[in-house]
Length: 312
Image (spheres, rainbow, N blue to C red):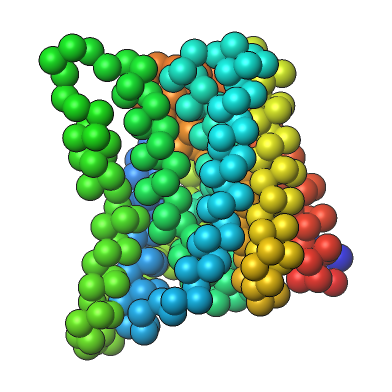
């Protein structure tokens, strides 16, 4: 249990500090947005590029890790859409936001320090492999659902708007740039590594603090039944599905299974809330899901670390 505490405690304590200061005048409304923008557009892309560019291209067998994770993820997304449609009677656009809340992991802010503490730099590398397809799949599907539901005659086409939004995704751009650099065999000079190291090393602490500040502005209100189902999907059902696919079906190495399962067990990312805000659909439910899943993940992640044998 000592190792679990060393992995989990720093992550949630930094978030708690951010949460506490987010309630003060030192960090007024909008402060978290600035910090999150830095992490999302500078720190994590620097970390991803620094991890991918000087390394060899991902091996073909690593695609099995992606297959195992996303086959489970998309199955749960489809289930969440069906539940929100036939049980909760939500609109088409709300179904997409509910499913996004049930599936989208806080991999950039919480995932990086957790996976690094549990599995070291190789764990972070594999996490980035998984996250490389995260926005590409989930945001693409949810954007198409929302755009089709809100489409106005004469407006931009659904696919055009979707492609445009993906073209602005910093993680996707960093991944493509890093893979291109590696494929071309370009040298990776020490000065460039040092430049990228500074923002890359700030990704985890700044992201955790920013997440705490952001959550301080969220309120648990309404739609509790739907939010709790989304939390159960995210923290319990998705890890079970991912573990089943990676361990029993694909028989992947233990390290890969552990990384995939822990990634699946991460709380809901704030992308679900910001997406709902952008489209004006389901943002209150998404905010509740983010807050409850983040608090609940303290217990579920701790238990999972012990179960996987990384915290014994």
